[in-house]
Length: 468
Ligand SMILES: Cc1cc2nc3c(=O)[nH]c(=O)nc-3n(C[C@H](O)[C@H](O)[C@H](O)COP(=O)(O)O)c2cc1C
Image (cartoon, rainbow, N blue to C red; front, side):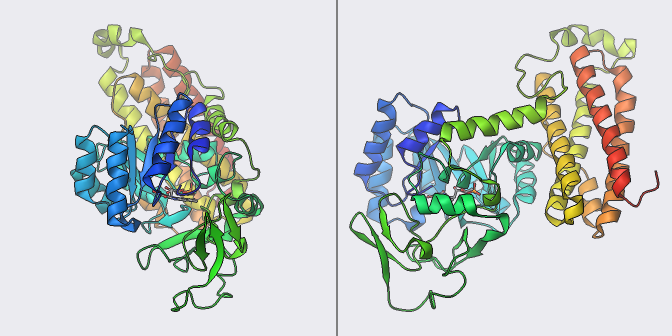
């Protein structure tokens, strides 16, 4: 996050085991150097620097890039109209390149250019928004088409969100807005407190904050006098200074968000916020925030499960030793197991995506049950993915066809009825698979999954038009 993410914030998230990017868009080389050195002095070696070529003067960009190469910055993040020659140059200099994209086409292009990591940014994101696709469509679309690791960005605020994007096939989650509201972020207190006070409906996508960026670029911000049109035409000729930062004027309609060093009319500045803003309820230490996100995700996964997300050891070393006999004994072979687990994963992912959609559209009375179901589906996707890895297989990036079928139904009660039948399909699959599973830990996981689906069937039946 430009302006907001300096060494203080990156150090705090790194200390928690996350990976931080210094937001250095348009910053002078002296600041990049001092921020990188500050991190290294504190013992942090793994971090990234984010640059945005499209909004940086050519000479400054060249100086920024040369300085990052000279400093051996381990990772560079790039965003917006990413020049392929730059990706190649950084790659050739031994730097890991992470490119944030908003469409599948852009993901393909940066992969072709040599990017190492794709950050898929959904329309829910705070700050500048590259594409128009919701995250739950973008991730499965990109994951299914690339061999690169994909991180999900946009509207994520807590551990349940982390679990959900992992369920959708992402390898990791990017948190922006959630980290503005931290003690270490360089955002102005006004911005932090407006975020804490916000509800989900308070963010809007607008092109009204445009000075410093290419025309038409949209940002997600908290609604304010500018987005409500009370400050006049954003595209008029005169520039009105409404504040200052380190001696530089801050203009009305500019993309500058208020920082600790900013003075002026904060209400009219760009108060960047992702769609998850309503779930950010306190200004916290960033380390505590990351720990809380991770603990919530792990907690959701762990309850009652033998091989939860945290378990590192293979599910059963004995499995491969017995694999040759398993077919003869009636147990599923490793290949059969992997095929069955991947089939379940695709079906669960489809269920998770349908339910994710329903969490937005469901009437208030259904919200709580739908959110509970989403957590379950996401949890099982996570556990299936981990189990497939433990069996040295490759988790499928596909989404089951159930998703298309369910989304074709607009009536909420009918869609719930289809979900009910979908859960029944999973139950039958598990009932068929369980007697063929030799490994105790895996058997316990799948039995827990079966129980959870049976419980959910009862719950869905209560709320759907399906006769029980
Ligand atoms: C205050 C703020 C500043 C941002 N600045 C940058 C930036 O300089 N470079 C960049 O690649 N993305 C930037 N972004 C976008 C983030 O990379 C990311 O897509 C976004 O924060 C994810 O959505 P979320 O804010 O809902 O978590 C910014 C986002 C925010 C909220």
